[in-house]
Length: 60
Image (cartoon, rainbow, N blue to C red; front, side, top):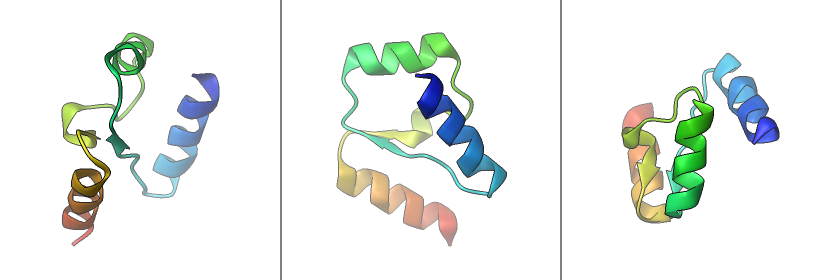
């Protein structure tokens, strides 16, 4: 978890966001419990295709 949060901070410092796809409930609960910055429902998607589409839409 610490490594993932560190990577998220690294990406955010460079103007990037992490998009998650196909997270299982325990993983999502852990991210929520840890209070991972930027982890909001708009960045969690059911499929990789949905996550890519959301990332592309946000970048335009």
